[in-house]
Image 1: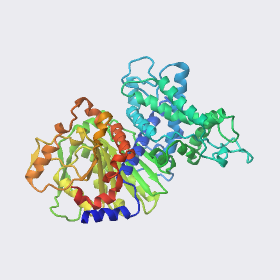
Image 2: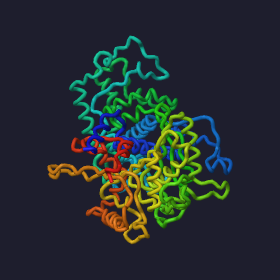
Image 3: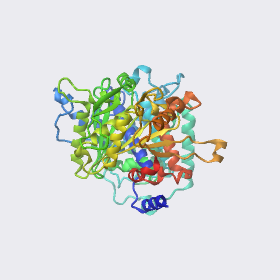
Image 4: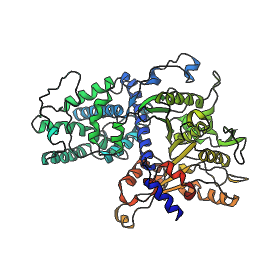
Length: 582
């Protein structure tokens, strides 16, 4: 009865972003950020038409002449970033151009590619040697396509010149605007044309292996913008609306001038309250991207939202040989406990995954600083920039998830990051990062309101249970422990299995083990081998960002999950009831 009363009181409070919405938003922002990172590489090497200066942000303007500069402590006054709408607009232009070139020449181009297709006619293919330029591009575009396919609106919208004027054109005040009279009108011609366009797009693109949906969905998503502009011409060149060429010019001008207000028309291409629409309307800017030395250091990015006073720190997953080297260096290392205040059984040292710890705390020989020092310095700079009431969110996938967990814990021990509340950490497919002592230290930070962690993982993802725990035991039981809140995304039943209903996502809190036996049984239950799916060849797929996104989208759209805590409560509310989620 007490539990039901507590849940009822939470439901009646002011609506906050649910944990599922938080996860989807963080994933979408991180995905666009690293798509942007890959576009910068392609632009710098001349493989796309977008000029590098249109992609330039603070990290590109920072001086790099001294050891202090390279250590991340350069001073700068200007702030220049790009918004999600800016990145989506660049994707729109580049993929549309590639599609037009493929249609004209019937030759494969370089933006989107299928890494497994061996046919000569596969559109948008890259050779293996080109993959070094943008290694994460195929997976990220696939995930982006999944998001757009879910969010895209089938309604027809026209882009009005008066509302979104171009620099070289002064709209007529006497222009007839259909939307002025009935903005939601959709007639049968629009509907028929939309369906016909979609069918032709699918037929023209064909079916590819593995990454077949990258080209198919991406082209449909981007060319729908031109298709909607064509509707005006199709219906008699209505005065006051942009045609296909003009809408491309509008996007190009907006990108060049960094005028994101004129890109807001793209919101109408997506459903109400969809993640894509939220991103287009968002004022969040990506301002810092550390990808100077990807072969030796981790890649991270910082995004700020001045209106919402939010700062987002994102770590990238494993792509380079150095990434994999650190990810597989799974021995434990003892490091000093950063928590200064006393708490029950406070140890002087904590045990962490050596590879993750070294990525953040390897000391430079020239400046005696660490990667953590660099990231924390940049994060503090942007926290001060957005205002006194800032909030900090840290996220990442795979290796990035592990680094996000470690960084967030250390940052939570600094007053400059927690003065306005807890640091929220959202991870996807995070492996183990520490043992008993680390978990207890994290719980202390959670109890003092300085840290909240949500770890999303897919059923069948064995990486979330690495390093293997079964054969490593200490005096207190298992060596490796998860901390924070676990969010387990279930398998999606299809076909005739739907009659049995959908399995519910599980939200559980990683509390302490009460005994050695309990710790051992927990270790046996979380052994890596038991987590691999019966169809073991799908094990790698289960760890991908695409699979996380797919399952989260299904949960968000299906009615079967309406009573799950994942879709009802915020992370803060779930932490208030964490004792009941153990």
